[in-house]
Structure formats: structure tokens, C-alpha cells
Length: 468
View (tube, one colour):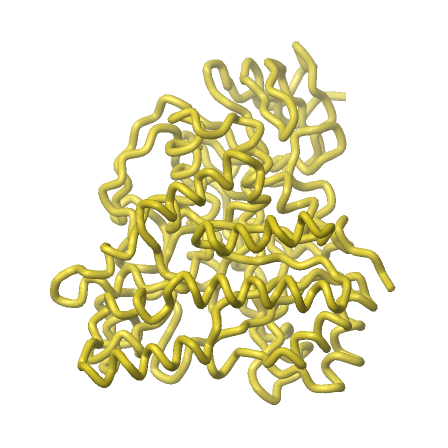
């Protein structure tokens, strides 16, 4: 049978191998990998380029409610378009449960926002902010059975955080259903204490965001999260780790035999707390939680990537416009760091930053890059037929020019924000062609696919899970 598409002459990379071969695609799946695949209706010449699995960004925020008068910069159209142009073919946004809201109701709203709008495939994590007996005893088990197999809890943000008893109860639901729990680890009470001190002395500029969320509040919360998971005996994902001390807590838990997944993000590799000191409130562009640290913590995070301590590399894309009354410079945000929305854009630049700073500079090899950006995400979060180039897998592929040199400019990006925190960063390596389910979506860096090509993907239980 004639192939729909053949990718010829490229170098394929998986999480375990790098080899020269062609790829044959039919009906949205990879059906041939050989030195020479059969005849095809369309051919892509990948000579001199890398043929990699499409990126999976398992930590993004899109169209998420963000408080009175604040609006997130990306909807599902702009957010997934930006993801696609950065070499991603699947994203996992969060579905935020409001206080008093059922999770099912929240999901219906998110599905409605995403329907027909996506350039990539997508699935949803659940954010549990109201851990009532009915939510934990009825809603969550039913939703896990329906393919929503991961949920997130917060230890910070007054309107989102759960106390330790609520976290334990939520983890117990995960233990019983086989779901995977993600934890945002920062100690809210310690942060509020430090915020009070800063406000008492009038230190309210954006740079204070970093000094009110020091390493100690993340380290303590990480220790507490892995300890609570140990009490309940469940695996746990520690998201957006920013420093070596928190990573040491994860290493210690693993040494005790605990199943702990560690994630880090680009902001902890190339930004520092000094970026929050920009003049005229420019530092607000870099406000995210946890905040960027210092050069020594950048080294610690790179070491974790190099040695295998980190399993996942995600963007934590959480975009707000900067010069906007509903964004970073909202009326209250202009007066204090406390009211600057937390989050930065980054879904489109995640892969090029890690490729350039990691692969090109020799810190990690190509297979490690694939594992950190695609394969591990699919395995850990139960995305079937995703994350690798192999017979029978979805034909989600990014073809990279490893020699392409670009300077990151927001004017060239495709999200809904009005800035990038990585403005001016020079990178080597960029995805030029992107294929989603066998359909060519990006050709030579130009969007050629249609909105709505991406679909919702239910997930199976994580490979880490054990149903009690």
C-alpha cells in the first residue's frame, strides 16, 4: 500500500537510540522505519536534519481563571498554535476547580473552550482546590476511570492551597484509583510571614517576589510533600523544581525507595532572580513561582538534568500580557509585587532552549533530550501511542535543523502575550517541520495546518501507579 507520507534521509532519535533511517506514515500512524521506505503520496527530505518525536509539554496553563480583573493571555487557539510552532504536538493543560465547583462542571467548561480550537492534541490534569468528601469519594474516582488520570494540589496560594490533612486525603484517593498526584511545593505560611516583613518596610517592587519565596520555603514543602506521599504510599510528581536543595529532598526520598518524579523548567536554567530587578516595574515580566534563583542553582538544575535526577522538562507556560490592565501591570499590580499575576510564557521556546543549552553545548545527549521532552511525559502520564518514533505510534514528529541559529524575539513567536522573558537569547537548533497524526502542520517554519486538527486524548493510568 502507498504511504501517505515518507520522511527520507533524516537521523531519528528516540530515548534510547540515534540512527539513520526513513519513516513511513499511513493513516496517522508510523508504519515503516527502514533504510528505504516504500512509495508515498508526499515526501519530506530530512537530509542533514533530526527526526524527533513531537514534544509533549505536560505542564501548561491555558484559559485558566486568574482572579478578578486578570485574564490569561492565551486561549486554546493561541496557546496550542504557539506550542506547535515550538515543535510540540501534545500539551497537558490544567483544569482548575473553583471553590464549591464540581470537577465535572469545571471540565465541561474547559472542553468547551478547547473544542475545535487546538493545533495540537491535548489532555487535562485536574487541579483539586476543594477536597470535599463528595469530590474525593465520588467525582475523582469516576473521572480517573474516564481517563483523567492525574491531578494537582497546591501548598501555596491562599485560594488554592490544601492543608496537610486534605493533601493526605487526596493522595489516598489517588492510591485507591491509581491516579498520579502532582504537587506545587512552597510553604504558604512562611511566604505570608516574609510578605508581611517586606510590606512593613515598603519593599514591594517585583524583586521582592523572589525574596519572599526563598529556597527554604520550596525545600521544606518538597520534604513535606514526599513525606506525605510516603505516609499514604503513593508516587508523587514534584513540579517546577528550581534549586538543588529541593532536588536533594527528592534524591533522599528515592534512596528510601519512594517513587518520586521530578520536573524542572527553562526559567530555572537561563533566568535568575536578578531579572526581577528591572527598572520601571520591568521585573514583573519575570514573576513566576517558584521564582528564578541564582547562578549556583542554575548549575544545580543542570546537574540534575545531566545525571538523570530530573524526569521531565516542561515549560509551566502561564502567560499574562505585561503592558495590560488585565495582565502584569493591572492597577494593583503597579503598586505591589503581591498583585502581579504569577506566571510567564514559554511553551514555544521550551524545546529550543533545552536543545541549544543542553544538546548543542554538550550537557545532555540527543536521547536524553527526547526522554526529557517527550517520551517520559507520555510514559509517566499515560499517553498511549505518544512520545516515541516506533512502529504503531502516532505520527507526531518534529524535524529539526540542528544548525539553525535564531535570536528569540517575541515578535517572531505565536502566543497571546506581548513579551517573552527570553528576549534576546541566542539559540542553536530549531524545529522546522512539525507533523501531527500524519498531517503536516508546520512546513519550513510556516504554519500550514488548520485550527482544530488537534484532538482531546484520554489517558490510561501512569506506569508508576499501583491501584490499592
